[in-house]
Length: 352
Ligand code: NAD
Ligand code: TYD
Image (tube, rainbow, N blue to C red; front, side, top):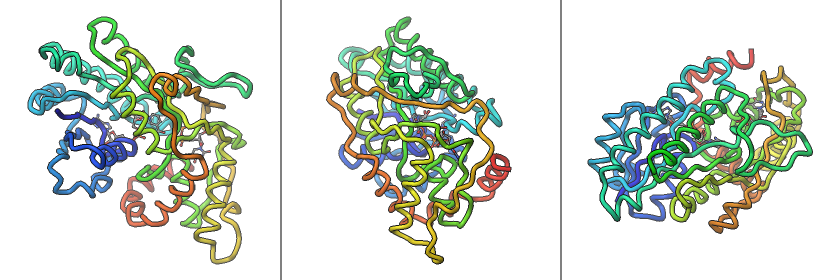
């Protein structure tokens, strides 16, 4: 029995792999093409651990995936691999279509062939868990109810449109071929090993470097925030107890405007590592040009996963933010290693 994890060197994938191998002996084959967002340092704690088998490769390489499934007798695919950053999808959508749409299609084809040849009970037990986002549902007004699994898909960015397309393919493989798929649609994650292009690690990194904390537009856009450890536990619940063909919304019950998130980060940094001049890090807040097509509000109604699978997040926003700020303060070496030349080129392109 083995799990195939795709994108397991990225932010959420590596947290999932580390959490899984802390609690289980079931091995993981980790397939990752190591884009700018993939980093083997995230998995350094697993060096020499025979339960973790890393494969450097692309999910769109169908023969490779077919070989891995057969050689390792995979019982489930946890599909994290994706291009995941909205701003990058605005500057260059091609990679998003290639990995999120074509890559997911190739992975589904490999899974269909492998699963189709399995015998019961392995065939009944097989699962394809597709890790997706709440962004497929589009944007809410301030008074709209939170997204349920029944909301229409109304993706607005090339990123969310590519994820929506992949969700539809996954759904179709269940309805057409009977592939036992599960889909999760999760809100914004934060925590260890998140690349400092996303809001929370970017703000921590810039604050400590004495750089501006860039707020798009008026900073009143709302997101729901979930600690990545809670996302990993939700995915374990979906894998073990989810019903094939079902989708599950995953969220933290933590809706916050961006400006409030940034102030919370500054307050933790002020307490844990005050600036030498005694001023608050909040004095570095700088309003910048808004993101084109910026979604105003996302909110997740996570009642179904709680009711059907008994899952609720363990962290509050305050406890999760405190842990995260402490992690970044203790891991300056990790941040320094990932903010290399290509990172600096991205920052000057996006914030010019
Ligand atoms: P990430 O960008 O940090 O990591 C993505 C990983 O996928 C990287 O390791 C990268 O090298 C790998 N990858 C990219 N293209 C690949 C390819 N063609 N073949 C193999 N590997 C490839 O992303 P993340 O934030 O960890 O997100 C993981 C998944 O969760 C994504 O599917 C994303 O859509 C979804 N998600 C993310 C969030 C969030 O807040 N970050 C929220 C909800 C859902
Ligand atoms: P991000 O972390 O990119 O996630 P997503 O776009 O998938 O929600 O952004 C979170 C919110 O923070 C989003 O409303 C955009 C905003 N934001 C800024 O205001 N400034 C920034 O520099 C970044 C990266 C994001």
